Image 1 (cartoon, rainbow, N blue to C red):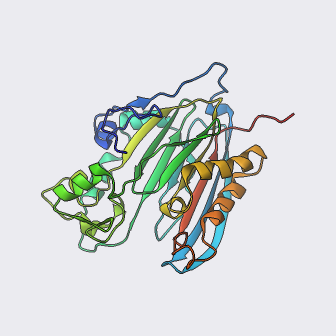
Image 2: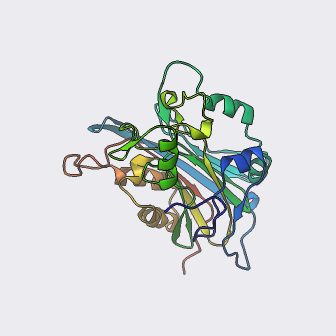
Image 3: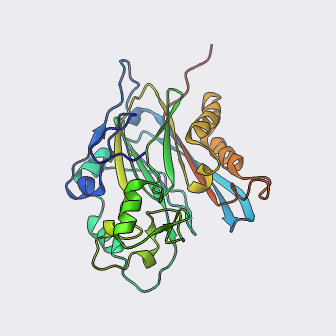
Length: 306
């Protein structure tokens, strides 16, 4: 369901355009109910992060799942970044600049970003989606371009912190048609089944249009959420290879079992990636055969069991 800019979603968040956040330096914040007795700030928490990555060749061949784990202690902010493509690497790291300050002040290397989005160069080259989260003790900010997704588990419920950019969305389809393109069989000009990405410069060559107006845009949607520290449990980031076979709710339910049992996010991410891969490509009509990348970030420890 499309949500107009400035319109509040049912989960309490508002959609914020990249221009508002990065150019004007104004981030709209969607508030979720905060209860008394919130846990200490993120600077006093232990943040566990993990990435699991599975490469699929075409729709038939897949390689093993690799996973790694990193623990970040005593940091005010955590950046979780996943860019599935030909090269993948773990990029969860700490930041000396408060996350919300980065978003509000537009401290995002805007000049370099704008230059990249102009699509200079002749080679169309590859492309990839990107979903990024910045987590502070009070806020979670998420930026995404494409159909990778970020999901928060809070008090056992799943909350999507990003919206998929696909041709079925009315706002995305309208932009494509204004740029002279069409949607054929759920794909932009019959080719890509997503509407925003990094790279894919072949679709960003119209010099009469801004980066936001191209057939395929590289401009992200940015959303900011107020944290409920006594309720927020973990965050999952995954590329479309995960979400085509697993719903946001199912993913949170599955990872929550690992979180409640005190098992490492490394195990949760790896197991979730494996769960999404089809054991029988023919029977699944090749769903679950794409490359899969998963990042799991624990935001808190589970309550102790009696």
